[in-house]
Length: 165
Image (cartoon, rainbow, N blue to C red; front, side, top):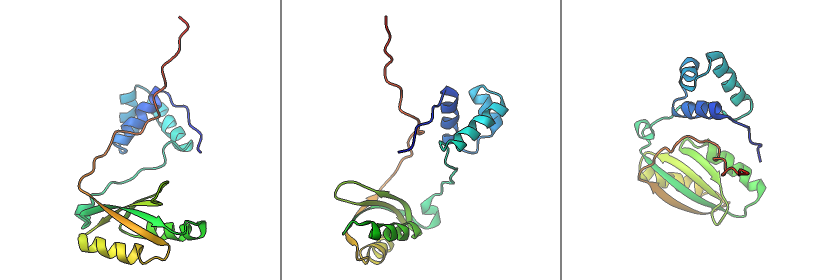
């Protein structure tokens, strides 16, 4: 498990702003958080160096790219052994329909978020790329009707402080 990085209020404010818009300039960030642009640049560099900031991503609208149907596939792999898992993960990650892949605990081994053109394309994907694989024992499909972005990811709030009054 990765070690936590100590972040102060300025770091958290920078992270919140960048998660809302990663294109925010250092000058804009600095003005918003109340530090000099050079200080802001140093802080963002430290957040990158320590692995808090992993990168920047461009979000696209799947529907505008001809992939208007999104689904979650619950996949059970049997036998669940390392020599089968590596090739399975590599193949699923390489599929253009795959948006995200999660290794799970419980009865299902993987959750795969996919984006396809239509129901026929989803059926093709499930049959040709999942159930045709020898190690795939079961696939359950859940259509996504709507999804929402959630707030910025920040560390857990500190617990109540104990004072010696």
